[in-house]
Image 1 (spheres, rainbow, N blue to C red):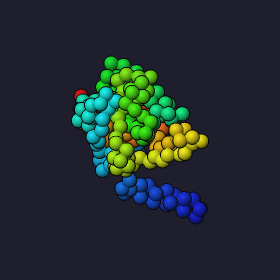
Image 2: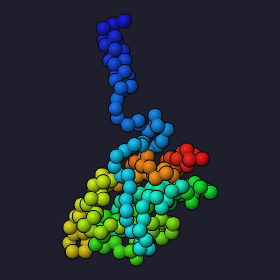
Image 3: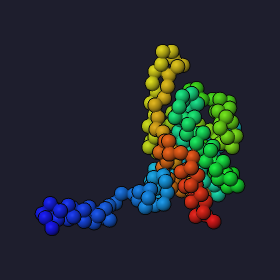
Image 4: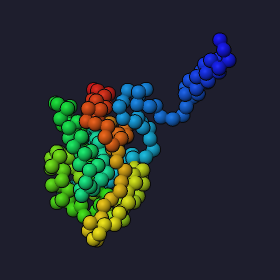
Length: 203
């Protein structure tokens, strides 16, 4: 065996041993989920918000369901409607288990997203989804606890601004524990598969 080949083999062995000692979270393949497995994370662990019906909500209200939370705003031109559409499609793919998936949309634009606007917005995707909002002065702490980025981008007029924001979603199991982070554009099939796995765990 020539020297170059021996070096390559030894390098590969070293990398495989190091990967077994990594303290990083298990990747999607190892965990069996299509999304990123963040089980045991110390962030995105809960909330106390008001829904578009004016009702106070916490994760405990949805015990027995898999919950998917997405942060966005109703005037978002692309990312938000795409994500909510995929969430609605995932619910349909679940068939009889669709009622065990709860979609939650948290507004990062409290200045424009009134309860009436958010109710209509949710209805265009799935009437069972709920929009949640925090008081403007409470929003920074909430988003920090979820590691969500958002920033106002000024437009040509005071009301034509846009909001830059994180585009992924958090997924919680039926006991209200944060389990997964789903990247934007992962698709409804992958999300439905992950939700099924979490529901199967609870059976």
